[in-house]
Image (cartoon, rainbow, N blue to C red):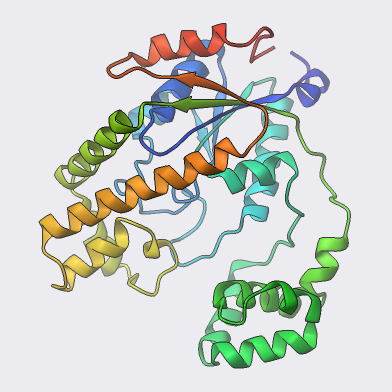
Length: 317
């Protein structure tokens, strides 16, 4: 395979809700075709957060090399635009080596960014982002919004006055680059967008929810509480961006004595099911996904065969 051919080949993207079995099927596909996997998971990009994000194990990553896992520390805000840029870089690097790429993950916004549905946000050095964030913390949301209204009224009109995260992001872009977020939206994308071929995995809802509940139980058995304690020992806590997500937020409350373990597990299971439902809603509204139904107890190798039979043209050329 030459890199020119690889550059024009649609990249297969395996999507679906959390708990559906994407990791195992993705690894089987990659193993068969000598592909490397580019993760599209919005939580697995964080270092030190392994058990609670169901990150591929060391053995799984040895079976199929993974990219865009363990990219940033938990206190770093990582945007979909940044993901799209890094994912395209990884695809180009694999093409240069003549290696097929397979994107696997359930973050719909990441997939959209990869395929060109989002603008190319500016890259801002981590140290600068941290300095800016420290300055914003000393100012009220109302004051930040008032400043944004003066600097970038178009962005201010799009963003709710109480949406602090998006207000800070818009200010961060301006303060780091000297250009407004609106002006960045108006710029043409500098990088070429790869074509994608979307493959979705789905299960009957009751079976999916049962798998999610079981997985949360296994997380606890695998030392999830110890993982969260380790994060706290590193200086991360309730105000840390990555730890605001389901699972970590509940375990932090558990460590503070605000929840007992059984209640924490129940809430994590519920929030995980709700997240899966939101993912399914997103992907159902996404055109061009070829859906594959996975039966309860089905071997990933059999699901892999279903995927390969479902497409008239090979996923990997």
